Length: 56
View 1 (cartoon, helix red, strand yellow):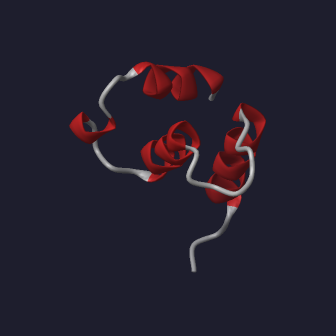
View 2 (cartoon, one colour):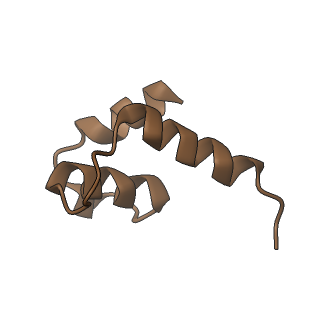
């Protein structure tokens, strides 16, 4: 999971990749648009929660 996050983070232009949850979260982190600090561990936790949630 860390490798996936780092690969996405290394991309210079988020607009060139598919707009998915991870891309949006990384852009929010990069742009500082959140009132909280979003760490790499926070992003990993969010991804784990989404993967483990049963479909609605």
